[in-house]
Length: 270
Image 1: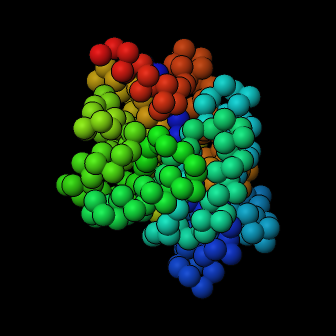
Image 2: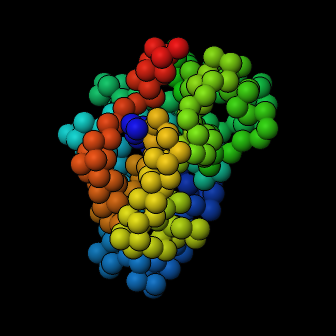
Image 3: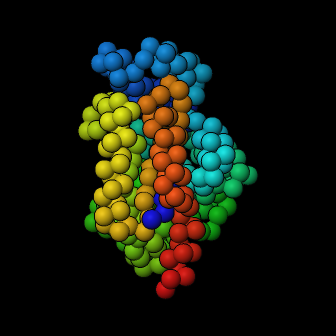
């Protein structure tokens, strides 16, 4: 089994949300609940306020640096449209796309439109123009989809998708590879709540059970989704969980690759 680590970019700045959605008040409520319940330390609480006043709600550069040092291919999904709780501009998205391309990151789209082939195709064309790329993949924001979404993504021309959450091996829909994923940071650490509800040890145990299940299902690829927002000492459990997980994969000889490498392997087996 190999691992494919990917990162969804949901936020870039604090100001992109002000007077536009409810993300900021929800964030404030969340961190106060976590502090009151003892899930975060006073230092984390103070650092979150520092991030707020620095207008910095992304840790893309820090995450790429860590991944590169640890030989983990950096695969990011970045949006070109606004969606639920996602409000950054194409201008801000382009700045990061250019930096990620300079650092040899794999870049796909964090999709918003999932209802119709027309809107899905339009979003594909927007990202194609913005990124100056011809072949790329997608993961839907909040992994939203309906019974036609995956087929329409294939028709729109996507090389791959990783929206489905399931213990399945990759499979083809038309010319598109579908890469189901199994582990997401929030599902492990929030554990059904809207805030951090478990400590690091519990998060590790939750993760090990998922990896064991993937091994029992004989999965060729383990899909892991970690949001760059949480690669920070202001989210210490999330940061330590990701660092631990990358070390666990290394110690257990589970190689990390990106989607494009996996597609080459799958195509060569046919």
